[in-house]
Image 1 (cartoon, rainbow, N blue to C red):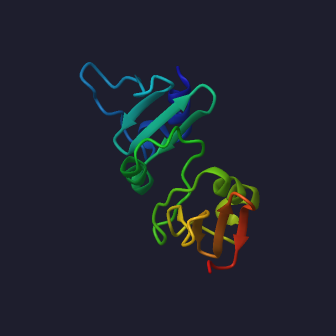
Image 2: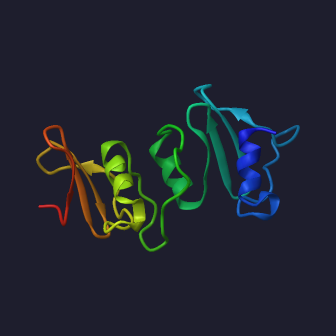
Length: 149
């Protein structure tokens, strides 16, 4: 058994939300990722990606769609954080680290409501959340704001 198999069965195996493995020719096998730095396996309801330095994490639903739209952002480093009310949004880098340090979606910020974007002045990056925003600038790092000016 592999780390991908372990994750799959921890999530309920064939009876879980991922469902059955997707048949690929001779069977549903793990495959190398395009960059050859990890492995992945597709299931009816999502995929599990694994890299040696990160571990195995699943992606499915709206997050899987968003991830595909943005291009390969790297390996997932957590299982999913999203809600149907806010949709799927990407959060990464120092902004992600700040959100994590606050307690993810259980913090006063709640869930993200925007993808990361450039600030109007072009000096930084911002991600908006239900309860505020995290603004990153080279001078100040990641800082929580009640709103974006």
